[in-house]
Image 1 (spheres, helix red, strand yellow):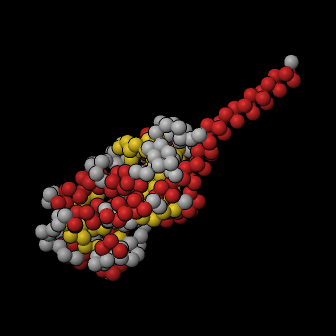
Image 2 (cartoon, rainbow, N blue to C red; image 1 turned 30 degrees about the vertical axis):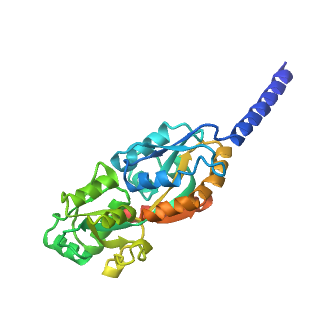
Image 3 (tube, rainbow, N blue to C red; image 1 turned 60 degrees about the vertical axis):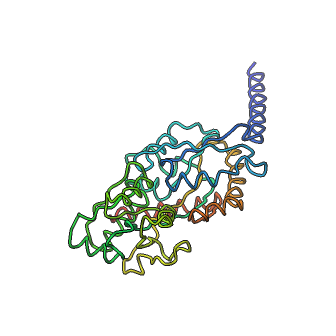
Length: 322
């Protein structure tokens, strides 16, 4: 009897394994959802809709990807849900933002870390920039810092949340310029933070280059500096913080890409990892991203894994010092 049971178990395992392999080979056989942990209209939402627009093509996934916005608390609401409640079956993906979710996991109070997710591919690298309203009296970062020194704690400026790239850039600016700033995280993310600048609710803001690019094209803001190691081709007239005398590196640059929950079947991960980068490389996608002032930085799964590990180490050191 024991031999019969053991034999039946082996046969059942083999059948199950074969069925799983076949199901992965047919993946996806229905539409896929991708969570964006920020509100509609912000840079992550704007870009996520562009880079997934060819998902239904036969040379891509062959099924569309629908965007589900779960904003709140600088991304924490969406990523907490994704780490703890999303099905690990390949039909619920998430956009990631680095340094955001890594910095938040380091500071604590969330239910995720890099160990909670499996990266698939990266589509962009969006530097933070300092913006002011078009009619602001500030015309350089020196103007901003001089005001902050003369008025400690009274330079109000907006950002998308706490321990997101914007906040990290703000912390770096405070340290490099030796000033006290009044950083105000906006509950509506990057889009809300930009509106606060344009409406004059704050004196300035740290935002994504891509959001700022579109706002400047509309004539509503001035961009005073880039939190990166070199100028960006989308706005090569805007100097870096280092060029303006502030020792600030690229730790706040916002990398965006796609991930799945830990526990997703390896066959599904491999299918996505082999397919998603080519979606990002599509000519229509590249054209739309360029038109929107959204810098692309396509990385495969292995490159993203290395980037995550590097950012984890960098942010642990940076946040310990701040």
